[in-house]
Length: 145
Length: 111
Picture 1 (spheres, chains in turn cyan, brown):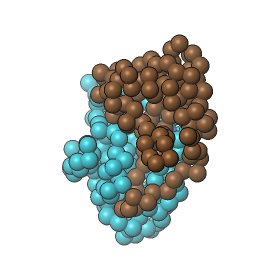
Picture 2 (cartoon, chains in turn purple, red):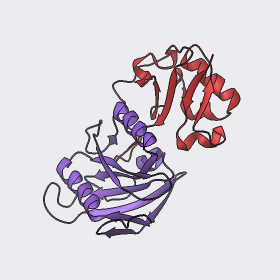
Picture 3 (cartoon, chains in turn red, brown):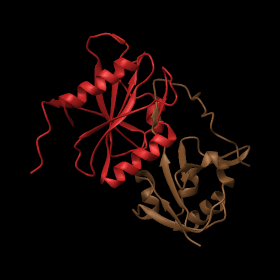
Picture 4 (tube, each protein chain N blue to C red):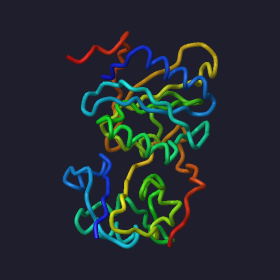
């Protein structure tokens, strides 16, 4: 199960709507091993495409260095599909390289840049195997003891 | 001669769980051969052995001292003692269902 706070959820949805019809992408980092998506980081889609996303290679290095320095990992890796459902494509599955991450997909196919609900779904993708999981949106993450 | 190589989570099964290992070589190609000798299986995950000869896999990024190796000559990129090499899988995907994913314009072929 993915537990995510309302503000982060809203930020992901807003990013997806803003960038539509181009795919939006980013991560939510959190302390390694905690499973807590705490630090929202929007990334630039270097592919600038409605059907493909890729983090810029230099941005990617900076992101991973920063996470390393903070003892974080990418708890959530999100991107949008702009014309298809919020389900991992074959490309998504083939390129999923973070077995510990929650892969969040948002579909903007229904309302595009406009107000309105979006599909927001989360998956584990490990060795080519996709497992959907429940998403629980909470007002804020409970503080760690 | 020692070069530190940072290994991403997905490849740590090949390094006994180590986040960083050391290797040697005068260029990236030699370094990868050296890594393979100590950590069998790594090379196949880093290199694509197509008809045109081996090249870095399209969705594997390698950096030498923080610079994308594709701008340094790819597998021919020269290395010296004390260099730091970072391996990171691309974070990529998308709604496109076919295998026809765009190729990064920055990719330079190496022999």
